[in-house]
Length: 247
Image (cartoon, rainbow, N blue to C red; front, side):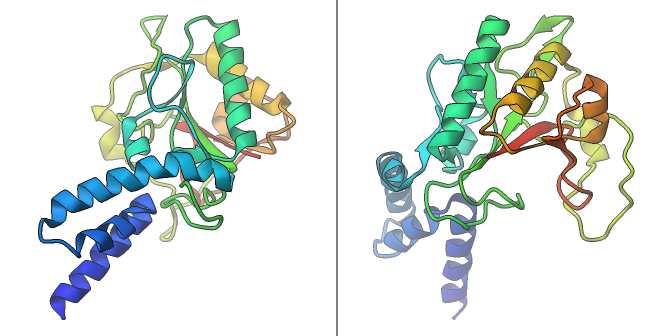
């Protein structure tokens, strides 16, 4: 009984984290060399998803190459969290091209997007990344007045918060993590304000984009007036470490 419950838990965790990992684990249970078969099955299913997902309305974002649009970390690709609908992919490509044109050498980095299959399948811990129509963008950073292409303050792009005022009260049930204890571990990079502001202005002008979530103190800092630029609410994760966009 304990062994059965253990496998149920492993299946659930792998499914929640990667969508197809649970299926790979079920395949592995049929063989003695379980971990080897799991790794092989997961790799095969992940590669298959690159071909099958576009037939079902999701497309992968680039994980390798030298283009101006990239996933920020290979971790998102390994976990199959780099899929979006074609319209979102087109908008992201256009944003990256615009940023490269305005600021040569600029690399636009995507964080979490969505899984390859099934609308409504949650992408935890996000509240809304469940249909391929949302994606998170990393900020652009500088060090000593020099732009740093491909760099973020944290290894995964999240949780390196920009300081600023908030009107959110303390709440027991909330994803609004401050993580004060973690902030001192990040390198002292500065926001590349010209690039971040330009990206926000372009996104607010793109007719395909319906909403852009960012903290109010950053909206005020950059002087963005568009109604598309909104506050995500006090129960959702902070958005002064990344930009959330959705169709």
